Image 1 (cartoon, rainbow, N blue to C red):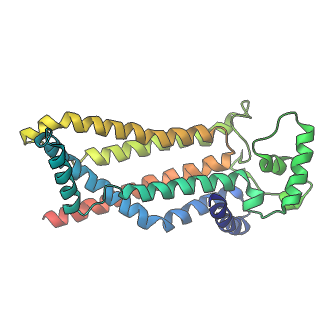
Image 2 (image 1 turned 120 degrees about the vertical axis):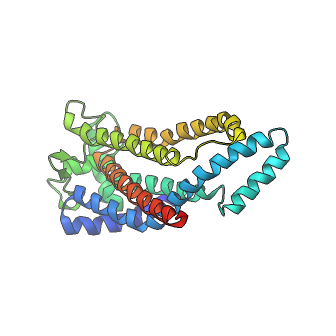
Image 3 (image 1 turned 60 degrees about the vertical axis):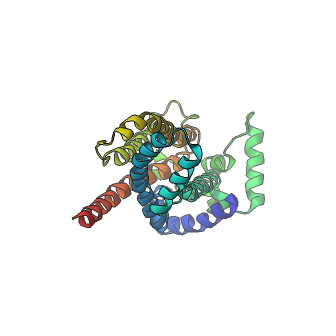
Length: 282
């Protein structure tokens, strides 16, 4: 299934590349188009985030009130989600979409000759065998090596990887001496944690004052859950950051662009939702 989506995305990326004749610009345009396509899911996810903040406060009361009655707590929790018209598993669908997208783009950037340029498999295999004969270690990204070593003599495997002085076929873990290979991954790291901080701030920024004694008493237990969720939210960026240092820079550029778009999207949607909330409360 991942190969299917990578192949599908490859047609779009190749179309954009043929328009701009630059791999980096094509990736940025590709990121924008994908973000626009997924905008309805992002809007729903943002709405779910705001509802979750509200539900979390009410759960603090329920957990203390029914701490000795698990069955009643389960029923009240179900009623709470039903009353708020929220599915507790609503985040699973968007998470699945994100994982499929992440893996598909990884496949696409790892093997651009296969998925983007649609180069004949035999040509790729022949060049891979030739390069492997000249090197003792098998390359984790054979198609990237083909582009770097054979593009000058064969237009079929040529992709313009130059992007503002950076070679998007470079792999940070292999090019330790070139500091420029770390620019995009470092910017990706910064934007990743900025995005996480923004999400956390949006979850905590609109909390109501705890005037109810039960809410006060139940806050510790729920706060432990919130901290666990916060720790989990760091896992995906950390995983992606690790990959960005051992993958071609093209992948890190896609993730960086996606982060910048995501931050802008969160800011805009948060302003829109807050305005609607203020109007409804007026």
